[in-house]
Length: 50
Image 1 (spheres, rainbow, N blue to C red):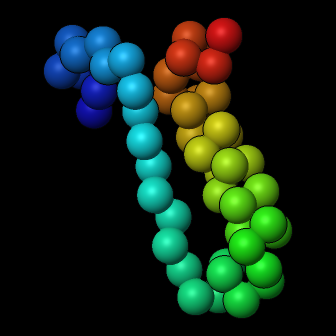
Image 2 (image 1 turned 60 degrees about the vertical axis):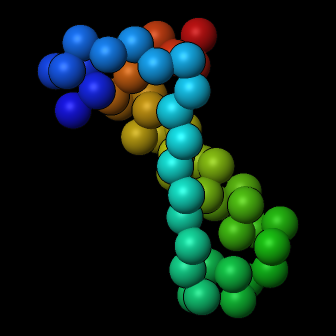
Image 3 (image 1 turned 45 degrees about the horizontal axis):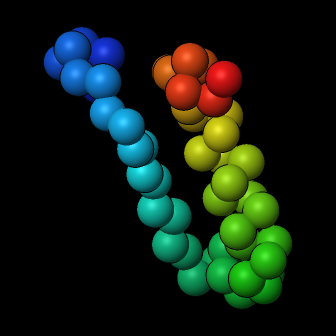
């Protein structure tokens, strides 16, 4: 959606909030959310991870 709109944002943010995820502990939840976000960005906007 971002690519198709010809927008070049300086910041991309994703929020993941889940009771199941948080029940594993804040550090594990943060690590999993970061990994998921990184995978999504790697597939959709790899240039922002460079």
